[in-house]
Amino acid sequence: MIVIGGLAANCLVVGTAHAVTPDDYFGVNAQPLFTEPASSWPPQLAAMAVGGLQLVRTDARWADVEPSPPNRGVHTYRWSEYDAIVQALAQQGLRWYPALEVAPAWAAAGAGDPSPASSHAADFAAFAGTLAARYGSRGSFWRSHPSLAALPVEDYEIWNEENSTVFWLSQADAPERYADLYLLARQAVRAADPPARVVVGGLALGDAPLAQDEVGFLARMVAHRPDLRGLVDGVGLHPYQATLPDLYARLDHVRAAVDFALGSSVPIDVTEAGWTTALVSEQQRAENVAALATDLPRSDCGVDRLLVYSWLSADSNLLDPEAWFGIWNQNGSAKQSGQAYTQAVLSMRGLSARPPPGGTLDLCPSSAAAESAGRGATVRGPTLRLRTLVNRHRRQLTVLARCPTGCTLKLALMRRHASRLTPVAHRSTRFSKRRWRIGLRYPRRARHLQLNVVATGAGGGRTTRVRRIRVR
Image 1 (cartoon, rainbow, N blue to C red):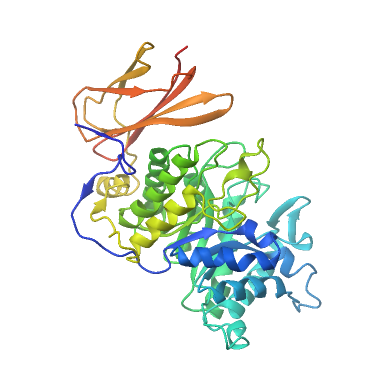
Image 2 (cartoon, rainbow, N blue to C red):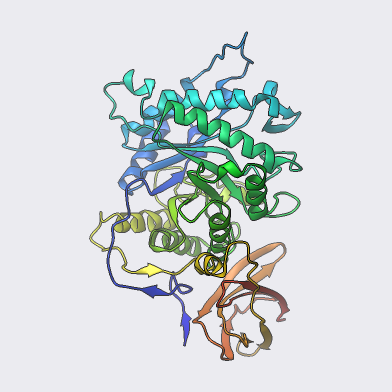
């Protein structure tokens, strides 16, 4: 039987128990908010808190805190910008999730490169440790603000998309340099704040030449510093994908890689995930972010944090997809996606009349399959036989697919227009050796379609096929 529709149509649900998601699971990225006047912060932060969110992620820019080099080994830091942010968050019962990044010019690896030179890795670690000493569990900030309910930083994300040339210009030796930097920073943070979680900076998904493969990056880190095993508190991930099934497939892939490189006990923090309405409809984004909130806490993917990107965005330049990620309006009202996300969060936290959905979702089968196949074994994807038929009169694409050795199938049909892909239909199947005949409807005005098919075999290996189809 083909599973059709729904926010979690590509998942197998087992069990019936209802469980409330632990505290400090849900959050949001709010970088654009803190570029606005401080007078605009309280109503936006209050809306986050009312919506059940507890974590707010922003950059902690080393360049802003220490613009000048140390003088005879003495560091001078400027904390006023982040004091204001942490105070505003705490006043609304929100906790900061900082991403420590951006080297000052005096410590950068080169002109226009935000990554730190290896010779200044210890200076970055000093910055990280001092930040933890100020805002962490023993933080001096909280002692100097006794009227605030203390909400110390618990998660310290070391850098952001360090496998991307945008945030770490030279990628030739980035995994090795980053591994050294992470371990130095973790040691400094833990010395100042022993219970802290120090998280590998959110990895971008591989997109050559802008970003190298996230799994290969992680593997090179561990090959360079095997002592990372047992010393990583979490791995950040930014699984941006056009469709929800694609996002879950990439999460499954990374989960298996983390298990292999670092161990199954190491959680994944999804520190950015979202959709721009330059590429998807607001309704589709609303469905997607609500699905993330209800699916990931119940999944087998070991996700400990979900921080949607982004609370606000400029919503101004129609030619810039980056300007359309916001789930909330500048005037303080909720977009459909913001309402869907916060309603799902409240339900999952047991704070609404709507009970959280029950059961466990099998979103990351490759992890268990790879473990059972043995560490170091390469799990091949299944043989996939695929044909497509177009019925222009009915506006239907028929997919004929079969894996002789058996597989599950995930299909995503997208409409291509210029360089954009807009989701049209999704389907998934149970594990079978049978031949599937799956009909996917497409819009009347569509000319070009793209079909993505992911087949997952019994051993967890995946085979992916992409077909571009002209229908007019």
